[in-house]
Structures are given as structure tokens and as C-alpha cells.
Image (cartoon, rainbow, N blue to C red):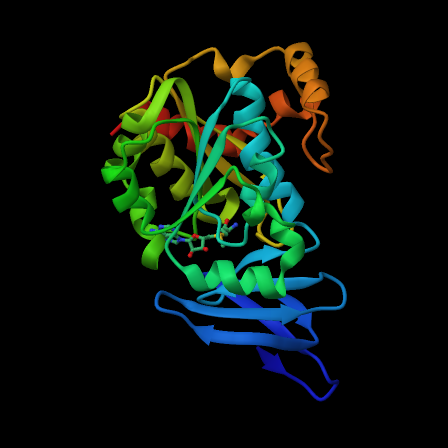
Length: 294
Ligand code: SAM
């Protein structure tokens, strides 16, 4: 944080070379170096509370709905009949909250750092909004890669809500991990992944699609703008053997959305299909991955 004499300071994120993103913060509510990462929770007057891990914004009360709604409702409404869901990462509980809005039997959430869960429950309760108390929620504190290699569970939807591919999150971007996810998906299942901000981390999108393409008939990505994941569109990797899943008709999605009777502030059935349509620079990065499946 860069201090000044106005009683507040700037939180500066310098994840990416040559690009700095800052938020005005009033105070640090909590700081701890957990077993896995440096965790800080900030109070801001304009953006609500924020949690950062190793200096990188993970969740912000003001705009978290965009990311959490898009990484859950796109695969879940496309699938249409998911019973078993797995979230890898997601320690703040926002992904769990949104997934449990669907009539699923269980959401298995595999988070490596129990401190993230406990501290977000305490300091950012609005994010999980009671989701951890839902009897359908099954929280597993473990490395997601080890879990996926060893579990005998199978899933209809797998959502990778990880940190960036540095530190403990790196393994969750590997082809070996995607192979294990593939092995744990039920027929017709789909996986989605946090895949970086395209303008800044474009190679991450290309690599993710390449690696998914080695295991799935349809490796693609969709996008949404998340203001505090600064730099433009956030990409979400998409991997499935069900090649029709990406083009479920909007009227079918609308029926499923109405039947689910859930409220959303970003996702809606007409936007769903559009999230897979890309500006040329994004399409080029995506096609580069599809052409060179590794
Ligand atoms: N929305 C954020 C983003 O796009 O970067 C991700 C938020 S969520 C807090 C990321 C979570 O991934 C963290 O709680 C972190 O502890 C967890 N995580 C990182 N590596 C992991 C691993 N190998 N297995 C399971 N969870 C992991």
C-alpha cells in the first residue's frame, strides 16, 4: 500500500509488468501469512471490502457478482441437469453461493487454504452469504490437483476458481490436472476455468485452450468484464466433449433460468450466448490455442 497524509492509502496491484492498478483503501482489516499465501483484507469506501492473496485482488464486494455468476451459471444452465458440481479453489465462497442456487445434489468445494475460508466467512460474509452452511455444500481442504487425481467422485460440472498460475494455483492450469478433471466428468459434463485478463494475460488464454483441447472435443472460452480484474475482458476456459453445449438455444436457456427462479445481476439467458462471441484480438488468441492443441 502506498500511504499519504489524507488518512487513506492506495492498494496497488502490480501483477502485470508495466501495468499498475490501484484502489483507494481506508484501512487494513486483517493481514496474515497463511500456510500458503499472504492474505490481506482491506476496507474501502467505494468498493466495499477486498481480499488480496500475495498482493493480487481475489474478491471485491462491489463487483464479485460478475465473476461468480459467469463462472457458474454459464456451465450450469448450459448443462441443464447438473446434480454433482465441483469447485476447485473459491475460498471466499462466492462460487459455492452461486452454484447452490441450482437444484444440485451436492457441491464439493476443494480449497487448499482453510484460512481463506475462515477469514472470508468472518470479514467478507456477504460473499458466501451462508453457503457454507448449506447441507449440500461439502468443503474439502486440500490441493485441488491432488484431490482430482485421487477422488472417486464424478461430476457434471467442474469449476476452477483458482488464483493465477503462480504459487499454489499454478498446478491448476496444467494439462495433467485437466486430464484428471476430464476423467472425473460424467458423460456430457463440462469444466470451466478462471483464465486471466485477455489484454494482459493473453498467452494464458491460448495455453488454457491448447491444454483443454488435448482432452476435450470442444475447448473454447467465454468472456466478461470484471472491473477489479483490471485490464479488460476476463476469460473463462471451457472444456467439454458435448459439442452442442456451447450453443444451447437462448429460449431453452430462458426456460431453465425461469424454472431455476434465481436472481442474478450480471448473467441472463440472452447474454449467455453472447459471452462466447469475441472481439477479434480475443478470437485470435483463442484460435491460436485451438489450432495447436497440446
Ligand atoms: N477470483 C479469483 C481470481 O480470479 O483470481 C480467485 C479467487 S479464490 C479466492 C482463489 C482460491 O484458489 C484461493 O482461495 C486459493 O487458496 C485457492 N487455491 C490456489 N491454489 C489452489 C490449489 N492448488 N488447490 C485448491 N485451491 C487453491
